[in-house]
Image 1 (cartoon, rainbow, N blue to C red):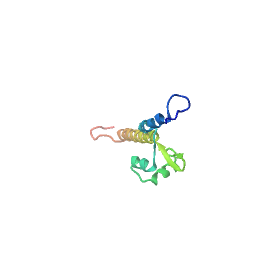
Image 2: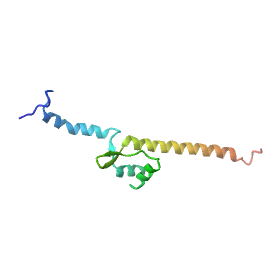
Image 3: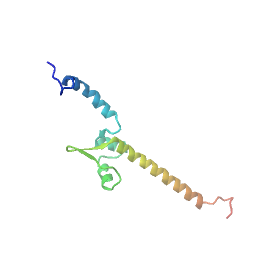
Length: 109
C-alpha cells in the first residue's frame, strides 16, 4: 500500500527514495558542515588548536548542531585564503623594505 504525501500526488516512498540523492547533493556543496577533526586536518594542526584560534579571534566560530560543533567548509576555505593573502602581503612588504635598505656595492649613494 502506497501512502500519499500531503496531496501532491507523490507518495512518501517516492520522497524517501529521493532523500539519498538530496543528501549527496547537499554534501557536495561548499557549505557542508565538517567536524573539528576535518578542520584540524585541513589546517595541519591538532584538534586542540582550533578552539585556541577561535578564542584568539583568528578563526570563524563553530555552528552548534545539537551538542556537536561543526564548521562550514566555505568558512575554513575562506580562512585559508586569507592566510595566503596575508602571507603574500607580508612578502611584498619585506621585499619593498629590502629594496630600500640594501644598496648594491656598485651603486654609490
